[in-house]
Length: 181
Image (cartoon, rainbow, N blue to C red; front, side):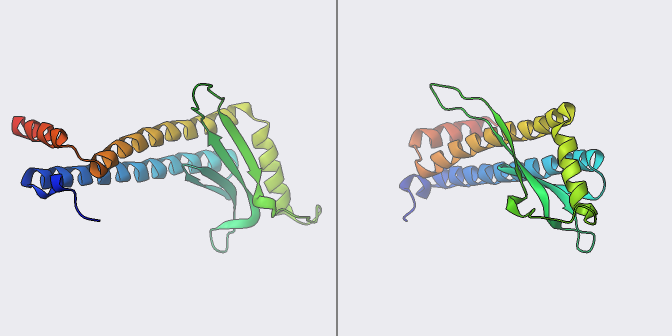
């Protein structure tokens, strides 16, 4: 794809460079948001479930589970996923959802007398689901991250729109701002 003629001028090229720099900063902020949220969730999980539990976070899903002490990864079948959704469909606003999915069907059967890990996993899930304060605390952590992620995404979309559809008046306005500083 050929470069837009607006970006072929000296000022246009500088403006494009500034927009690309802004996109980079938004991307770094999104990554930082995910990392900071994951730290908060792991601290919550270890405090609530115990040191042999951990979590991963992404803007679409949080996975919580028991750790396999041999490799530090999740124990197979010992996880559950949380999904937080905020809906903004107009004209009818719909409520938020905080949903749980258990182990992607990997739980299967287990020996209820001898499989202590499976028992602890199910007891941990039950304890969490019955604790309103814990559910609200974790939802609030994810909610703040979701709001921040949406805001950063909107800013990124605006910048990408300026990159994909540059206007000479935007370049001229940017040049005036640069001259003031």
